[in-house]
Length: 158
Image (cartoon, rainbow, N blue to C red; front, side, top):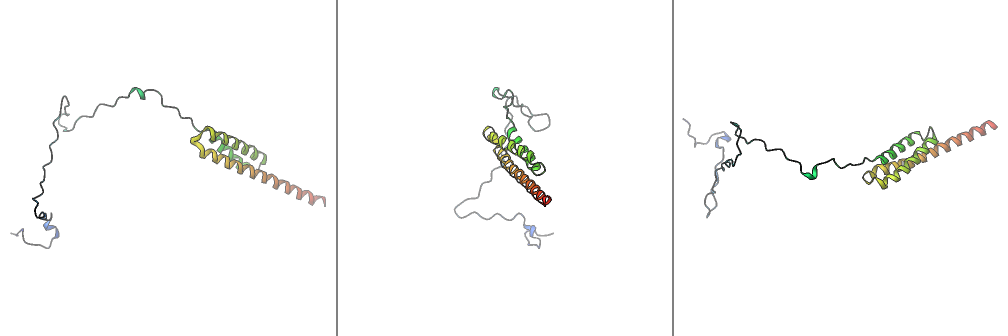
């Protein structure tokens, strides 16, 4: 038979490690037994054989929570501004007049949306900025077309 107090080559043989002695002047640290669960009170009855209490009653809705949810208006003006700006930007070179029309509409809707829809300020500012870019590109496209027409007319007249 093996002597349990004899050291062995296995490091886990002495697991758990011994508890160090308390500092001088103090007694051992008391270890409390786990507390028993409280006894059921009143008419609270556990389900038969489960050992767990039943589910609690569902929460009732108070009078302040009854009724339709408060309506939150979607940011329509800022969305229209951004969509018009993107369309104006995309059509500014092939159709300069449409680019200007959509760009001006985007800028107008964007400025109205900044005041009426504070939650969608970023979207309306994006519509304003892209709208101005669409107007600028449409004006540049129109100037390029005029320059090409002028160069073509000068070449034909020679």
